[in-house]
Length: 131
Image 1: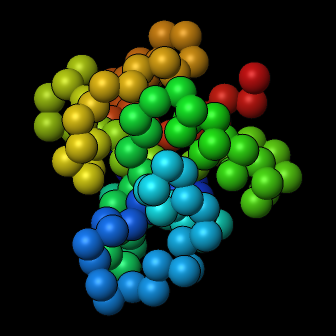
Image 2 (image 1 turned 180 degrees about the horizontal axis):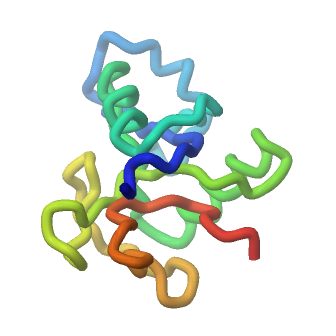
């Protein structure tokens, strides 16, 4: 089952959400606030956790954000650790969307990714491979 893989996560805070202290989201990329969490969770658990703090799993809009998020992971973990982000095609195979409802445009992932490996990958994970 695709959601049983455990991974760390990155949440993206909705700037209009007032309950959460935005200072806790110390990584700001072009006005978007991200926070890294090292508590392993399934993709569904990770998204639910992010929602509980007024956020969603991170969406990636462009190569610049992708590089910054990769650097954030490496800085926090000391290596490129597999990390959940908010992309999913669970509703329709091959039709990807972001859990924060932003437009899914960025597709410059590793070659042939996302590939729905053996029909079981329905969500996006940065640093899935050790290559």
